[in-house]
Structures are given as structure tokens and as C-alpha cells.
Length: 348
Image (cartoon, rainbow, N blue to C red):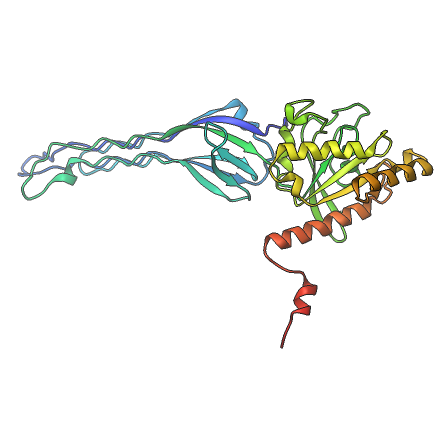
């Protein structure tokens, strides 16, 4: 299935059914009076996050969604039926924007979230509604209420706990394939990964979702390479894993390139907790590794974890570190404190 994370759609709810002008006319029955029924309600347009979807590909082939008009009222006080609603099914993590692609309409962050995008028109009253002691034979009925119509943008941001960042060929896809059942394409040329990939990682008796996005290059925020289009998929992550190819000439410069692109993109990505890892340590000598590690500590003032996605060296340690940061971050988002703090502050 092709990955599609953005789509533009047109929606139109249903008009309300018109009320009826009718009078009861039956043989041998006098003074029948008005008996026009009310019109039915037009269909609504809803959007709902459902399980089993991870792309907006369905909205590439159908962009227009129009609900039916409510059934018109009829004589003998027969009210028109309400038109059925239309529900657009999207993956969890989908955001809905106005036509300007900036004004947020709603965020379907979890499965089951549901938003009404366009309200169907109310049905009009039939002439039976207007009868009174002074108006015994009204000859008027209301038309149905007009529908709502609008253009909208759907933008998908994958739901993941941790995000993989790095320059092209940093070994992100190799790591994802090693720690999960995901099968991303792996090759020795840049931009092998063209679309985000998700994998479920099991570590320390628990699990979390890891997202691999296409590699960034210098100037990505200006559209170079694949640009920053896919960075939105890690905006919801609790932690970012920065993979740095230790076989590169200057790992510190590679780290700074990624940090610069995160700051240029915005979305508070540069403020998220991060774990830094030197990947491909099996491909360099011990002396070269020690020299690059010391240079990185001196210039960046941070200590990366040494690992190799291909051989599995220290991969479990990195995953456990990610799991700990995810747990702490999610707990802080819920306003909870750690068990240790609770015990220290406990009073009888």
C-alpha cells in the first residue's frame, strides 16, 4: 500500500427536505384541514479515527464527499426521512485543517475520536405546523435549510513513541529492522527510505513504537533533499534517537546539521528529549573511535552511546534507554510523579 500523509478533500452536507403544503380531502369528510408533513434532515459529514489504517491513500482517488438531501414532507402528515450521514475513516493521528492549510479544525489523536465536519440542514415545516385558531388553512411551508460545504486538508502524523533521526545512510532502517518486525528497504545509497516506517520494539518486558523517517540533509528546511515534510511524523514522539554514522569524517558536524534543521522546522522538536548514539562502531578501529568520541564530547559536550545496528552491539541498551525516557516523559505529561518521589513524600 502506498504511503500518503496529506490529502485535500471537498465535503458538502445534505440540504434539509422541504415541508409539504397539503390538505386532507376525503369523501364524506368535511373540514379536513392542512396535513402537510415536515421535511427530513440532511445528512451530516463526520470524520472518525479507526483501527487498521496507517495512510490517507483512500483520499487520493476520491476527494468529493456529498451527503444526501433529506426526504421532502408529504400529505397525510407524513414527515420525510432523515438522510444518512457520511463518515470518513482515517488513521489515528490525522489532523484536519481549513483550506488555508493552517487553521486547525480538529485533531484525531486516538482511535474512536470523532468530529462533525459539516452539519446537515434542518427539514422545513409543512403547512400543518402553521395551523392555528386564526389561520385554519395555511398555504405555506418552509423549504429545507441549506447545506454546508467546504474544502479541507487532511494531514497525518504517525503515532509513535520514539523517532529515528539522522543523515542519510546513518543506519536508521537497519536498526529498525534489527529491533522490530518491520521490513524497511535497506541499501547503501542515500535516501533509500522514501516514506516513514513504523516498528514495534520490545524491551525490558514492555514495548513501544519506533518511527523511522527519511534522512535529513543540510538545508532540508529550504527543501533540499526530501525536505522536512516528514518531520511532522515525529512531533508526537516522547523521545528522539539521533543516529550518527561514526564512519563519517566529522560526527559532531553531522549532529549539528540535524539540530539546525530541527530548530528551523519548529514544532518544539528541538526541545524534545534525545538519545545520541554512534552507529556502525564495528566498522572503525578502536583508535579512530576513541578519537572521534573525544572530539564529539569536547565540541558538543554530550556523551553518545556506542552501538552497531548490524551486529547488535549495545542495541538492547539503547532500546532500554529509550523506553525509560518514554516512560518518564509520558508520566510527566500526565502530571504524575515517579514511585520514588511518592515514597519519599509519603506521610502517615
